[in-house]
Amino acid sequence: MLYPKNPLAQTVIQLCKAKNIQHIIISPGSRNAPLTIGFTNDPFFTCYSIVDERCAGFFALGIAQQLESPTALVCSSGSALLNYYPAISEAFYSDIPLVVLSADRPNYLIGIGDGQTINQKDVFANHILFSANLKLNFENAPKNPNENEPAIIKSIENKLERILGVKQELDDENETKINTAINKAISAHGPVHINIPFEEPLYETTETLDVKPKVIDIEVKKRKIDDFFIQECYDDWNSYSKKMILIGANQPNKVEQHILDELAKDNSIIVFTETTSNVHNKHFFNSIDKLIAPLSEEDFKKLQPDVLVTFGGLIVSKKIKQFLRKFQPKHHWHIDKKNAYDTFFCLDKHIEATPNQFFNALLPRLTHFVKSDYKPYWSDIKLLREEKHQLYLNEVPFSDFKVFDSILKALPEQTVLQLGNSSTIRYTQLFDLKKTISVFCNRGTSGIDGSTSTAIGCSKANKIPTIFITGDLSFFYDSNALWNNYIPNNFRILLINNQGGGIFRILPGHKNTKKFDTYFETTHNLTAKQLCKMYDFDYDIASNERQLKAQLKVFFEASNQPKLLEIFTPRTLNDDVLLDYFKFIK
Image (cartoon, rainbow, N blue to C red; front, side, top):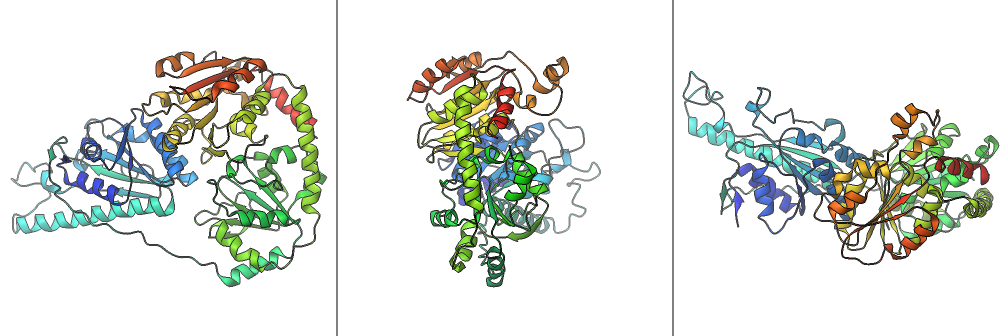
């Protein structure tokens, strides 16, 4: 087997292997040649070539999201690295492990006008768990014109001893930094950056490994929730008759079922779940906006909880955030091992544990349920909302709202659903989903920039089919995602094309003006037809309800190529249908 001759590249690659980082996403370049040679020649690694670094970052994120273990990104020096930033920030706020391996020029070539160089050190400082800036041995540093030795060496006395001593010191320092970075990505679930300077020559290979780096194991810190702390929570829990649990994004099957069943029995508890929470129970409230959007001031006071418990990722529903910021609970507890976001400006307990750990410690202490009509009252309203929801669907014309209803009902069981941001995730939150469907969305930063690339990465990591629902602006923005040789034939894209940024039409502000159309809604006449032809996707369209239902009957069937169904909806009607919906269900 061939190895890169560069010892620093050998060190990085061996430590990635020792830490079981198998999936390596490489963007082409020259400075990263030692890494590319090493990873692609070792059968342990599964390597992918993605030209566009922004797409590569989100593709890697999609794989890591599904495997719940780090993937590695490899790029050349210069601006290539900066294109990872959107995916890095998403990984940072969504707790997804990524290891960025960036090639760099030696330090003496930075800032002197040499080509393809930027200041790569700590470039992701505000959105990274750890930055490892590796160092080169000084053997190849430029000569001082007045001396025969490298400028860094001021004396020739004991030259050999000094070189060997400094080299060993640098090797130890580099190995420690690499170990620390990868361990952090694994243990703290987030992105890390390892910046690696390479001196030319870059393409030399060898048949032997010249280094054997030390492997530093992850320190496992076992945390036990303090008994006094649990008793304090128990006392508060049993003192109040209105308790609300709000669940954000979660991996499927993360919360033990007996906990969910126990919470569902308690009439003093309302459990609000978002589409991305992947938590299901018929007694939970799964369409938050459907319930609370039509509420009056008096209703909000009735819904206002005494205790609010939150866990999971960031919350999609803007309406629940507005409600809980205005009608704050007496207590807000957030359960998370790492983060304690004070989303509602009233956080008083950060429970540094998993939901399973906390509720398994709390629930056995409960000898009785607090008498309350909190959940029964709102359950009745929930039923009324669902009846009105169906009545509205029966009378509205073909529109985004109608399309989401048809699509979500047609989704096959046991599939992975990836959602685009903006309108897509918000419409989906208004509908019921089958319990066997796992749902994901890039809600860390809520950007539209990499949704398609993430979905494709997800589809590559999964054997079960991945279905991606997206809007037109998000899809066209990330169209380079299709420049990818790894898209499975069972991957499906449902593209809802309403000829612009439809979400802006439901936000405050003047619409139907030239400035609005150009700078906010960003109207267009683009279609995905030619992109599908170029990237070998099966392509079909639907422009009315009859066509859509006919297409959905065959769209999810097995095929010899991935498929895209483009659904055209009326641009100037969609916003009225949605806004009227909230009035109607009231």
